[in-house]
Image (cartoon, rainbow, N blue to C red):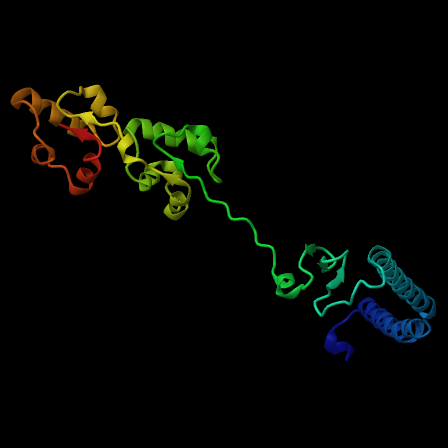
Length: 259
């Protein structure tokens, strides 16, 4: 075997020493560790756990006795019995009855408690006062949850450029409001179309038209050049024929131009 493994004398000695260490480790584990675990005494800890549980039970019994004594002292022995829901029914003076569930106490002037005790107090209903966007300032808008100073400022700036909102969906044209849900906007805002400021298409100048979000440079120059050469534009259909605007833009412009 020695020639088979081709070990030197030193390698054989190291291998033998390693084997002895492994055997010693195994013997140490089985003889010492198991013996130590087997002889560990947990009696002291069990007694501590038992004392802790007894103390907790004593505190709970004391609190229950104090609660009963408090109600007995306040309402007397004629206070009634506990209901299946954990409440208590009793009397306070002639013609007056009470019911308590330990947290909420309600008084009933009717000697017959009946079903009135089963009714839960209803929460008050509050109507939402919507903000009118074509008249509001930034402080009005900031009262709505989710609308801080930056959003409020952008809304007012865009409204002033447009001349007013004809639809709440126009808020999604503002970059920071593109992802806002329309259902949420409709819950808190309104837009009065009668407050929209219109542009007279036959009297405005280049500066006025180009400042409006729906008029680009091409559309503005086309309108001004036509007016200069041919005179006034008659109506929306005439404007469409002159400028060849697409239907979606026409639906928007109809709210902001007059002739």
